[in-house]
Image 1: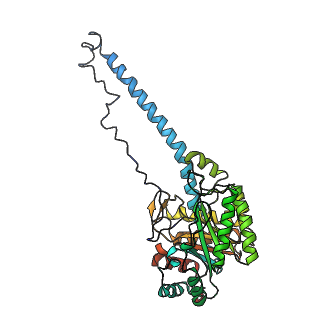
Image 2: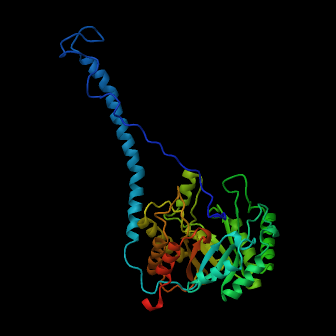
Image 3: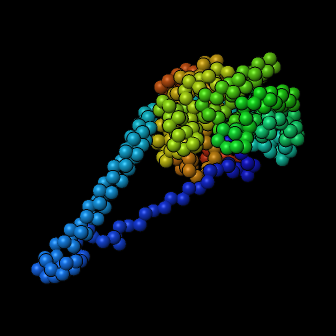
Length: 401
């Protein structure tokens, strides 16, 4: 989830589908093409007979073609039918009305790009941000201060204006916490990247955490991807990090993968696609118990419609609520960006659909959960419509309640 400053996100390669040609040009298997006359003339093969031998010869390829088509149809049904059933179930999950009172608990967050700490953002930008956030439920800013090097170290040159930002936010937005957003690519699916299995790397990440907190940040937020479900080295790292942040009285926060929509789905997808993507609900709970705040990246879901996306978010919200202890802040991600690529369609993954899905999941699972909110990804790609949908759906006017 590493951002670029022009509002782009790293994307997968574009998949170009090809369409098979029509069968219009294929010979008609039912029509004889080697015999002439009425069946009483000369056969092409033998020179005599009725002409039925050529028809039988051409009928055999026709039967094989029909059998092949039936096999293809059966395979398509086997693959598509469960998918269609699952999509229909998600759409049903989007039905109904959210419960009363399922609005912001004033524990929301937003991811902010690197321009806030490298000098590109000025005092006027901070003042504009303060006006933007006034009256919302946002309490935490995840400000990109990395990325970490693959060995776990963090160059101080990456965040020269960090202390200035933190001071200005404290002045303009009292009560808002500024957390350092640190991330890196893990070497879980490619040869290059951070290797959490190395004790030296984990020790360096802990050192970088101390370094960034010494710079004045109010907490630290980690986003390490792709992180496979069950990674015990990650849990070991979180234990060490949490001891450090607890001793300093600041929050430890992490961005989390989505939870298996079906039990064991991450294993199936890892086998099929080589990228597990999801976490088991049990592993999600193990992570949530080791941190103060966990933010689900509930976007890039491959959902094609607003209704199925909203139903998926409702499901993810329920699964995350079940796994997260009441002592940990749980935040559900909202897509404040508009790319169109495989895995994310802007027309489907909308803020309004996500907010409604969050409220439905909260209503059905733990309506009164206090330590709950949403997290907005990401500031530099957001539109006025995104902000309006967040406010209208999640931060209602008190006079309208």
